[in-house]
Length: 263
Length: 370
Image (cartoon, rainbow over all chains, first blue to last red; front, side, top):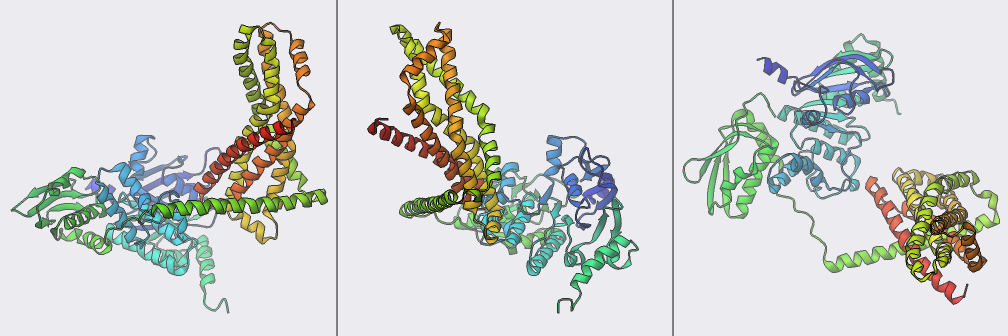
């Protein structure tokens, strides 16, 4: 049973100090956990340390103090092969997609499968094609990333992050730079994946529509407070939280969406 | 995916003829040889019973669908019975999502590819000619109104491209002079004419090698840097921003670079020549000839026309290296690989053009008897 509880929280962060070495910390005492199948948001204004926090979580930048547990394993306990093994258990979609420019889409998605599994070539192709179909890119398998639109590149990047069937996916601003239709398609995709594959998501986002529609829970980070200003469901953060930062964040976003503004 | 379930290894157990029961976790870590059971399956029908598998993910489902397609192509119809209830959503998702196998686009016919290459080379030649024409018109503009050149940029580029290249050029030239003198001295000594090593090294360096060496160092150092800089600017849409502001990339970005290299390469060449001669001198001194003998011998056989032909070539080479480097950068495509390709193209084109130009100059100077 103890094992069960651990496994039901793919990501547990305790007392994390966010920042780069030789610089004052951006955020202190950051603690939260993400449950299996949960879509969790990291919200906050620009420059508050969201991206740096994400770099700690995905194992690119060692955290100053505090603990990050991924699937019950302490991320920064060792480096080298240990860290690589944990890294293979989650997927990351970077803001610009970060697809390999000289590989077509199917090769981009196949790459982790070729490197880390012993599947027959045809099965790898089928698996990669399935992931691309899942994100709505059927027919684009042999296109190079540069010949696709920004939204398509992001979807392809999600397909690549799904290649090894991770239990947890980190998405850095998935809806940035997308039109509302594409952006809501992406939201639907994220929800479908979370429900059908019990995938957990950690999403850095600004988009109020996406926040309200997709997130189960979120934390709001604040520069002034140097930490978590508020935590809860999007509905709670937007309407019930007594945190002034949450009020500002959500009111500003809402005022932009208020009807009749652009008459 | 659902890690809490048991992790029994995947296996395929034959039940009655034509029916197999699949057991265990079916995911990406299944060894590929388990599927070999079906490689020699005769035509007909096969039933795969999924009811006993303990876990399934999309990679596992993809393998089953791949197997079905492979068997279908061999005339075997594969049928699946549904997996346990909790795995049905994933299985249905995979079955409903995956279409027929996507085949790579067919490779174009040989003649089509040759035609494409031919038209690309021609287009490349045309764009180079257009670029050169535009640059020459800006150069004429510079001669009419020299104060319009971005002198601050030009001086900065001279510092970056030439002054910073002094140590490496001098070192390479020194060593080439040394090697040249050493190799020839070993042989000429047999005939007692090792005094002529001075002339050999001097002529070779001043007329040919000093210039060529400098141009090749500049190709590697500055030509490639120009390609990469302008290529990255193109990829970042900075060049577009330049054009929409009403500025001209060839006047404001290319011209300062071309002027910097054209003006400064002759000076770098003079330095390279001195360094090379110094290398030759070191060998002569170790062979027992006093320093004065080396320079005396040299001044007797090398005149101003030798020096001037070398410097004239340096002037042309500087122009060539900068022009080709910049043109390749501006012609780059989008994306990080395009910048790398542009840089490679720039360096390769430069080296080829330098070799061809040097040969043409050799013929020209021979005919003109310079």
